[in-house]
Image (cartoon, rainbow, N blue to C red):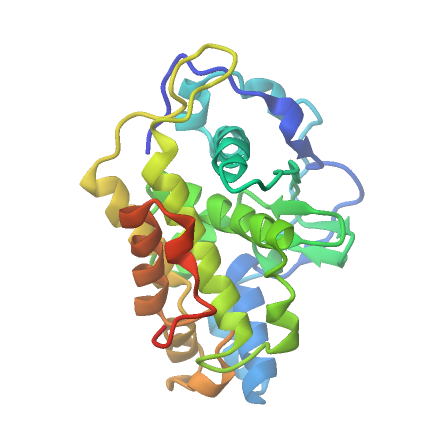
Length: 295
């Protein structure tokens, strides 16, 4: 979805660590991280998967004032880092009011942009792990370069809602943390019916729920909607991203076979279906993947 050009972005909700610390050679983005994960889960020699991981890249050395360029919705439409900021603003405006109807208090998470590597409450992380939410420090971490990797390595659409879906998914994990569902992933991490898969699919459903209501969420600074009306192309972009990060698609690309017993996030079809469930219903009660007999 495109942003309203006159929306004012609140950069205080996003910490920008890019360009801080020493540069160094790191793995090649989400491709490298996912392929390495597949290798570990399947007992595959990682050296056999080098072609999928992509070349190593140099940590970006961007100045500390990068977020100063993110001022309006027009900036969010033009730049990935500003789009992340705008999406974070919308999510932080949406979830408190929505959860209030269920007598749940939304505690705003931290959001951090980084390039190359960064320290987190869950340990050190590099670009290779892709976007993630750390419950220990209640922070969502994003390297903006991930979104191009998602297109180049895994064939996702590069459209705006493909990127906004990823941000909304990570915030979905924060909502799960508030509601007490997130620990299910650690207790039962692998398999087609596992708690890990159910956690991820629920976060996809929460992302779709936000999309359903996103064009009604108002910028508190201007009183204008953050986002323009949704189009079918926008929905196609989100579904493309959900499909690109399905376990079956990643496994097929990495090893030539699909092994459901090692799934941690769900299939492409499941991820699309649960995103659609959230979008069509707009109801958090319809996102109960833990009670679903058929994922």
